[in-house]
Image (cartoon, rainbow, N blue to C red; front, top):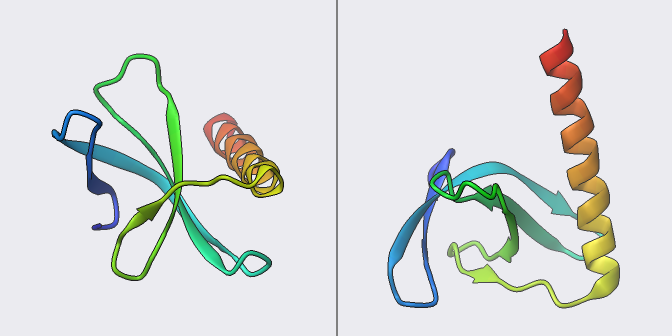
Length: 86
């Protein structure tokens, strides 16, 4: 992973360059997370994974963990919207 993009392998085994929105660490779960999009996808779907030091992406399966990530993402959106207004 560099600072703005990363390569993921899709379900068909193709390499896809994703744009990183932001990363963050949560001490309660002891994990680091990355939120990213496919810039070629017009739907604008946001993907989320936790990741290891080696760059391995891991699925999020815990509902409470998803709730925490959603709160962080919503704060990111609010901050981003405020920055656009100012």
